[in-house]
Length: 407
Image 1 (tube, rainbow, N blue to C red):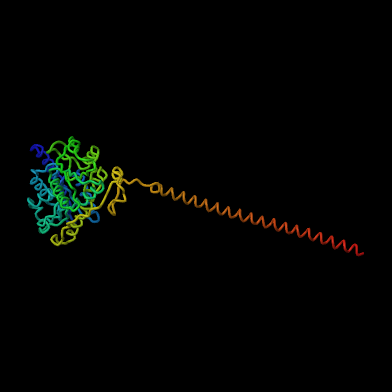
Image 2: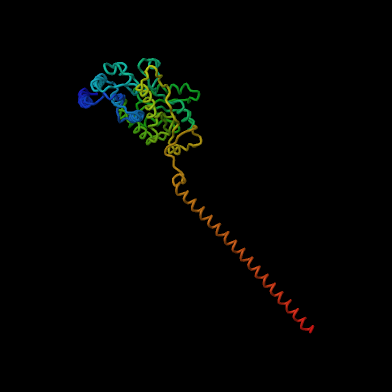
């Protein structure tokens, strides 16, 4: 980051912070409203950060709690030359805000806070989330708890190889801290009993290099995303996750798999995915326990995220993957609904109408049958009466004739 640009950014941040401090200074924190400060490692427009923000806010929505979000922006400025200035800014801005719990998302922010925090931040219990690796030192550290971010890389890779009958896997990553952490997880695939015969790792792919970097590999080799594309060259700016997936999907015939729910619907087939919002709600529950009076040191960190099998039905259809072969309890998006699902109400109205019509027709047929039977009985009775009448007349004539001759 250029010094002039950084100073300008910091100046405007401090000015906005001063305005916030001034507005906070007159607030009645004597009301004992609990307050939580959230430090996000990345910028607010990043989809992962947006998921975490929404999940945290949702996790605290049931109570009257002040939640403040701040952004370190370490994805775009990974060297963190502004790290200490950022912490000083927070100390100044929230000095009178009555913060009760500090939440920190992702590795860069947590590392900075644990190494450099002073004054206000030094006294607060910490709840972390989005941390890539389970560190025993962090698990056992006093004043800290949280939720580790676990990824189901082995399960996703194994399923991808099975779905495409492939014996090799392509891993796309970058050289950022997140990319390095993701690449470390690939070692788990190499140790798996179902490991592929070959794993190809492709790092720091620029937007204009996609076809060239992937052209030597068969189309049925799945691509496992473990990082982001770059705008240009090895050190170029990272492309947002969604844009990167959509670009890869448009330029490559290979099936693409990921490990985060935010990529679903953008071009990946699917996988056993981490839901950032749910992950953040878990962390908010831990923070809520602290606000309720429980000691942070009595709260054991959560070491396993809850990941779900999720797939895009359109991508499954694209690669002719049978839905019946998906892992049990898989969730689907973009699944085309049947005629019945789309027009369920109309179908039932039609069924009821036809049923009622059929019943009326049957009743009419029964009425006609009964009338015909009654008419037949009437005709038979009339015939019988005529026959009896004719027989009686003949008998009367015979008797009368006999009487006449007898005289």
